[in-house]
Amino acid sequence: MQIPPKTQSELEYQQQIARNLPRNFSSHLAHGLLGQTGFKLINAPTFLPAYILLLSGGSDFAVGLTLALQSLGSCLTPLIGAHIIEHRTRVLPPGFLIGSGMRLCVLFIALAGWLLPPPAALVVIQIFILFMGMFSGMQGVIFNVLMSKVIPVNKRGRLTGYRNFLAGLTSAVVAGVGGFYLIGDNPDNTGYSLLFGLAFILTSIGLAMLIFVREPEPPNTPNRMPLFTRLSQLPALMKGDPAFTRYFLARSVTTMGRMAMPFYILYVGTTLHLSGQTLAVLTITFTISATISNLAWGFIADRRGFRFTFLISIILWIAATLMLLLGSGMLLTILVFAAIGAAAQGFMNASQNLTLEFGHRNDLPMRIGLANSCSEFAGALGPLLGGLLATLYGYEMVFWASAAFLTIGATVVLRSVPDPRYT
Image 1 (cartoon, rainbow, N blue to C red):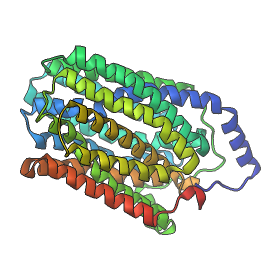
Image 2: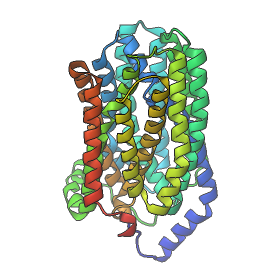
Image 3: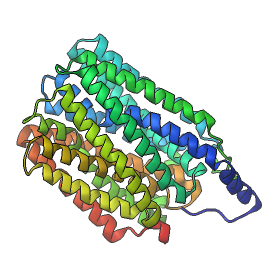
Image 4: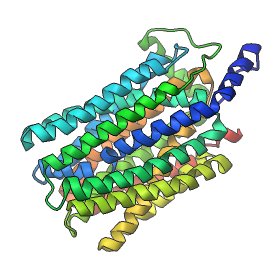
């Protein structure tokens, strides 16, 4: 990312960032630890797909539709989030409001399964999954801008590595408690509702940790303008930074590969009983693998850049997807979920942080919004396509299609997107 010339006000801004770095680093670490622990319970490719399958009476399409609604919500709002904050000197206040809305959606998802019969609960959960995605789309822009303001680029890999490592450890413990004790041998609405209620509590405490952040006010910000006027400038932004344009389009294609995520556990369910214990073991495997790999991804990103991490994580993801087609059994399934956990975490870290390194600081909110909108649009299409493929042709076709999208996206980045850190 291009930094403005070192005027006196800019120097003072950079000095404020350095002065508050220990405090802000710790606050972001605590926020990520508790917030990610809660959201990992919802976003892991185990509990929510199995819950939707239970509520829908075994419909693969309902699973795909629910995950697609979450991504659709995330697709609709990032540019709105960018418009809300790009003229502000401080982005944390709207971040608290939007983050609170996202967490209330988690609470209503938990209450729906507890208080309503399955058909009504499924509809209500799908509605609040959509709203959760909408709040998530805005929150993703705001909190990434906040991190770019308070954490220098050469410390971000370390922060995300430590944060995700600690969140993974706590997520594994919470997943074990949720699977073995809250859901148990005979999964029902109440057990899943208690699990998601616990997720609400953890994510809410995590959001509160940002109270301790000292956010610097940059010396200059863009003038506020109407949303549609700002959107009309996006073609010029894309034309002015062709490497960024190629990157976010490739990232969107790669995100289509995410279509397989909710169907891994459903495929496993064709040969193994999806009891609370099985879900707990595979969720623990997924999160512990992501946890341990975070240290490696952070180290690699700080040394070799997020572009390199992006490519390596996709190669691992493809290998894990294909490995699932080679056989069955609990041991192989554990190995597959370990590889998928590591790969998905590396991809998420790299794709989000790489976006921060292109272009000028004043355009950062819109760049994040544009990249996230396109990526989540692909993320919405992916589960829908996956649900249709699973219904018509079986889970194997979903995995082959996922591997194809991952390969295409990685190839574009390898051949056409230079590392912005070194250009």
